Length: 288
Length: 335
Image (tube, rainbow over all chains, first blue to last red; front, top):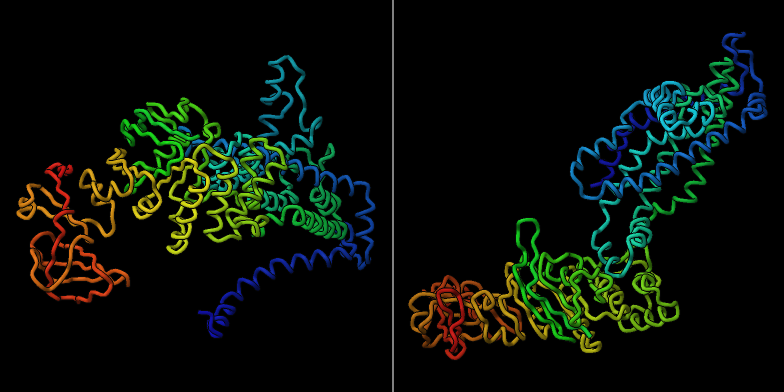
């Protein structure tokens, strides 16, 4: 099949896609790097020339930097923990034969189809509003003082909203993994005297290892850059300013493109550090 | 000890009755084979004994204790599955240790039993490997090892050789038979392959549509099949069945004659026909004879040296003392 001729033809035909993707990645990256070495204030004089590493030093010296890194990692870690644990539990439940299985499965996936902005607004106004929200009513019903979620428990609220969005994704992938488990293995374990808990711990969970790895890696990529949920709820206040949100504030609220670009480069570095750690911890599950 | 008794056991899936009321006793130390065509309920029967399926009615007794409602792990039975069902993320050692670990047997005893099983099954060099790195035969042996270390009252095998190639199958067949000789434990073995049944069993149970057609030793079944189904199922190549005037001569609706009980030649003979296909196995040759006027094809088993070709006219002489007679209902007519 793969003769010299067909191989060069294949390269030729792949070339447009590769060039497009490369351009798509390289142009913004180059521009970010370019601006990060400039003092560029669009509303206050525009391009004010090269400043070397000034932006980088200012960004990291800012009192907001380390808290934002911490907030980012807390949100990513919290959402990952919740979605993986509940995802495994839900997948186990949905794997059981039950009446109306098809409908239930679609309902479970539904949150994933809701746009982040919309779901965050729904949570903010319908559930978490301290006066009219459903939670407030629930609290009042039990005679408790309603919590103003987004200011008193801002971090937990955002983790809750984002987890709700990503739980279907985790559930779906873990459910397909559970369904691919050979039922004879479970029966063998049952014959071997393993209790349901032992069967879960020794057979099902190791079988899910690879799927969990996929969930963790993919979710991390997307969670490092969550923005809409913060933008429409807390606007980065109450300790919910992530690195992404900090960059947004530097560029659009402070109108400092150079400083924001330097932050963008830090965000790339942070993403790579997290990715390297993850690959170390869970990547071995993907081999063999 | 491992005497297993099934008393009027039935099994239904919804409205479909898979096993109609069935009685069967498997004596301690016996190698019993359930054999039958696919879908005859033999695997279901094994799973009922194992406890992986619940009986719809009736009673299962193991060593005269009622085990009908006992969970699988407490029945003291070990099962070897068709897919082997090894735990892919555990090493061979951990696979074999798993049932002992679940039973809370102490480490030293675990290791002693693992070493003994590994030695008996030629797995000593593979203990640290994962199942994925083993060949089919080795995986099969790991599955057997995992069953042995539990020291069960009986072993249950669910078509354990059907995923192996022909050469390995013959080897494993021998190994399982040897294992039975050594352990003297009750074994129940499910297969659709009558050769496995004939070669390994002390007792064969022939099943069709959940019914027991006949129970007996391999040679009993071979010499005195109770009906047409058993006669056709046991023995290879299949028994020839002849109806019509030829059967009337023997006062039977159908007569059966095994291919090995017919002599092929060119001289005088009661039957004659034309060779269609001849299958040479080296030791034996199977001739498929057409145009006999008796049945569509008569199969004859002859010595490997006999060399008739396609189209040759031959005569056939049956051994009249081993002709099986059956009535219109397909039941055997006693001699």
